[in-house]
Amino acid sequence: MAGNAIGLGNFWRFPYQAAKFGGGAFMIPYFAALFLLGIPVMWIEWVEGRYGGKYGHGTLGPTFYLMARESVKPKTAVIFGMIGGMLAFSVTSLLNGYYLHIVGWSAAYTYFSATGAYMNATSTYDFFVSYIKNTPQVLVFWAISVGLLGIAVAQGVSKGIERWVKVMMPLLYVAAILLVIRSLTLGSPVKPEWSSIKGFEYLWEPRFSDVTWESALAAAGQIFFTLSLGMGIIQNYASYLGPEDDVALSGLATVSLNEFAEVILGGSIAIPIAFAYLGEEGIKAGVGLAYLALPNVFMNMVGGRFFGAVWFLLLWFAGFTSAIAMYNYLTALLEEDLKINRRVGSAIIFVLYFIIGLPIALDKTLLLLTDLDMWVGSYLLVVLGLFDIIVGVWLFKPENFWEELHKGAYIKLPKWIMPIIKYIAPAYVLVLLGKNTADYLTNGTITMSQKYLEYLVNEEALISTTVEYARKIVMESRAIIIFVLIIGALEAYMAIKKKYGEELEKNEVIIRV
Amino acid sequence: MKASALAFMLLAWGVILTWMYLAVGKLIKAERKA
Image 1 (cartoon, rainbow over the protein chains, first blue to last red):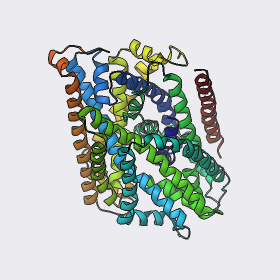
Image 2: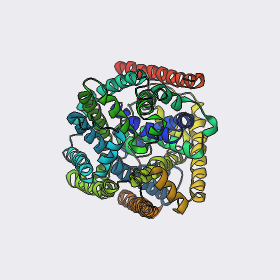
Image 3: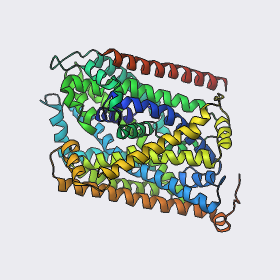
Image 4: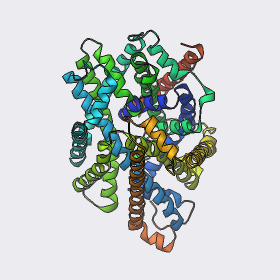
């Protein structure tokens, strides 16, 4: 898990989300979400996974069903199973669908660095835009990444990849530390008023008055994204653990390593570098921020081609390993629930990723990626987090949860943590989701109002476009999300019914381990 | 850099580094023992 603690979430998503939602104004709800949600939900998901694994399940539908039936009848428990299965299926399909594009960008920039393609570019922003506009090129790097992923999962070479993780991930830490040192010592390379220190100031000035409900939800989403929570993959991993394995201290250690990688390393690279070379406007570059900021450093250093290639290759590998975890979840789901063998299963998932990923590759404005990342990365993950707490703590019963958490634990957690997990965490999520959903309704995000579409065209689109195009893209995004949610719910219901059909018929618990 | 920004950054970095040192250190010790 420590290998998965560092990745694209730290170096790509964190800086762009922090820059988009006001830097210091983002960091305040970010830390609130880390302590009130991140750590509690991490423990809950490890407990859920290990409990599901006891019954031979590595997917969320049956696991949620089993935990919920501790408090409610099977016919009600199946609803929670369907919700959990639906959300986990949707997130691992949709999130990986667009995440693989970012993995593809890393592959492309490895190539561009090695060949020196951007070394003489007058603007790294224009270089990035020209890459995104070059659809065949985008498709090639994306297809290479998806293809390699499919082969790795089909061949079951995850174990071999784990060996590589042990070498590559420490290297990524070292490379990131070197970049942080470079970022701190950049000074003002372009204009006296632009400096990396100004970037640090932007990220760390605690502007309480600028905190909004939207930034608080985005911060919670980033915590879930970076810790791989609200996806089902932690449960899938934990399903292989036994009662003798520790989850309490391991959870705490995993989160601390990730926060080191994200806040200390990730927070000290893209934003300060963008501020030094591109000024305040540069950090508003959106999803492409890390890819248009970093080349500036490599262009201006000795051996920049080599170091740039190494950095982006390491990033590519980090993204690739995270993508494997999500791909594995879906393959396990087909294997376990529908008895489809691994090779065929991974081919089906490959086709699914192709269907989801192709429209994203064809969209030169990046609006589809941005809209999907908002709904999946900042909303659905948090919704699944809420159901983690409802099912894994409340319905499973808090005393059972506490006992499960301490099985094999290296540490005894203090009792005062329980009220945070039981009351404060769900209340915090409910307020965030409630307020933001209400805002989405009134500001036209959900209804796709003219005002919202104009905002997308003016503020979010990478290249200039029209309101009609934005409407088409947003409708496409919502249609994809709804379609995947329906498939996920049906799949979860079929999986539960297959193994627990008799329980559902008699509406009483029969199978116990 | 403004003092408030520097203070916030150092506080956050300090908490994370201490937390990482304690949690990872304890985990390594416990795993060796186990």
